[in-house]
Image (tube, rainbow, N blue to C red; front, side, top):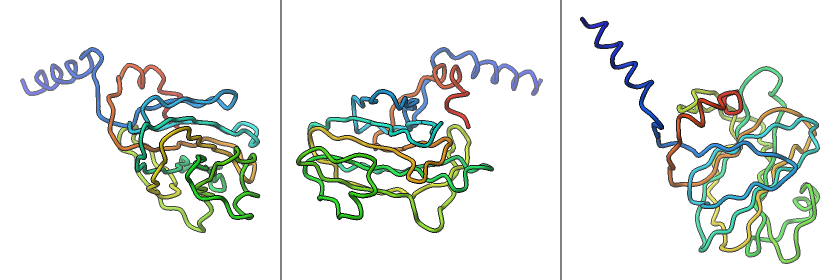
Length: 192
């Protein structure tokens, strides 16, 4: 009797149409075109892969007001990616101007009037985190909270040492709904 009840429960969970969970809204980045974020407050996990090591991924958002956002660079913790340390920069008017050393590390010149927050992801040791939704283990650059100005904001992701491999940029605050169908239907893109 107990096994029958468990089977019914399991089938019910599998057959629930368009089930939604609260987690990061996932997306797969393409280095050939900017990814536009509609609502910067929604928590996001942006997945990408450096194939050649010279790509620059460009994410664009336009907050209506200043907003405090956490940012974190994640790399799957697996063989071959120990030296893979993608960097990211938040670029916008109103952020501090870069030091000469920071400017030299950027993958491209800043637009006129823009400042920058740079996370070079170069700390000697990286913490390891377990992401509970997709059940994966990552190295992390560590979360950083940043007050992002209103207006045009760009996020650049690049590989300073031209390493190749996968990464995830996580940012945002409000948990959004995820359709299990999207994640399960594209499992190979989200699950490393």
